[in-house]
Image (cartoon, rainbow, N blue to C red; front, side, top):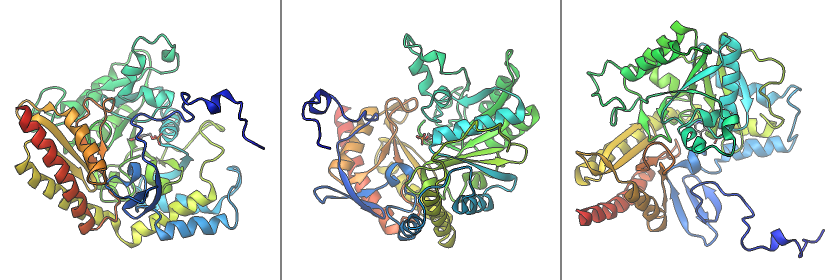
Length: 446
Ligand SMILES: Cc1ncc(COP(=O)(O)O)c(C=O)c1O
């Protein structure tokens, strides 16, 4: 059929053909390999964020590509109600790497619908209906996950559109954040008020019982914030004592990013439910929930999707996990991550704009401030670093944007977990040039 040349929408230069996400940048990428990608003009870029912390083995890992192609040669789709060999093998592999209390895997398509799957499982297991989440958390953009995320209050502003009808009420509690403690306390003398507050919040719900507490094990979009030592142990105890599910949102932290297939194993916690997404499908849509003993029952088809866990996607994910296992990439992530953090701390000695460097494996944040004493966020200069790095250094970084968390002043580094030391140094050399340019701008302002 010929394109309709009279169609007013197709011919309008003012109508956006694609509704674009926030932060859209008009770069046309045509090819990727390892930690590099190329635009349509052949310009090469170095990727310090694995796409969107998704291609954890880099672009087009040969073993992942081969596994997907091989599966596509036999069958591309099997209805979820039939057996699916690749799905079973993947579930077994995931469970073999998860904390030892884990029993089953529920599959889904994106991080947000997997979070909702975990919510269903928690509600069925506990009989509760409320959820506790942290102030600067991000768990997705479906109605209920938006309600769990920091963007919720913004969405409800002057809620004439009736969004509040769907954005459910959730219980928000202050964050863990030792660099900017929400209670104004100092680590070591705070008696872990951020964790203890969760106990108070659970006990003071007059209308309904709490079903779960959902926590990112390293808060990502909220500003790359590590949990203080002892925090998760205390939250685990609080959840157990109150009969509430502990849900670890590992959408960003899983798949060797933090030193193990699951960050739960690194921080030493057995959550009741672990949410997986992003890197799980090695670049294709796949997410899921690993469910612990007592948290594995659903009613009917209450959390299922037609396209979940298709054979080719599962084959790619399985190949990815095998590579991570064979090459001990959790260890690589820990070693290269420590090297990058050490070099960034060295830069901190030279550039006052660096307020704080935080990392767990290859999950790294660099917080930029105008002044180290006042900690005033250097939002605009962070935007400058991101743009300078992309346009002049040909380096893709991440950045906490204006609606991401409290401030937009954190540079994110989450390269592929098989990044070599030389590649990491190349990323840091390029980043340093952009930081030096930002520092010069800051110096001129003073
Ligand atoms: C921690 C966390 N949970 C959930 C989500 C939602 O994932 P998705 O965008 O795939 O729905 C994200 C996405 O950024 C995330 O970072």
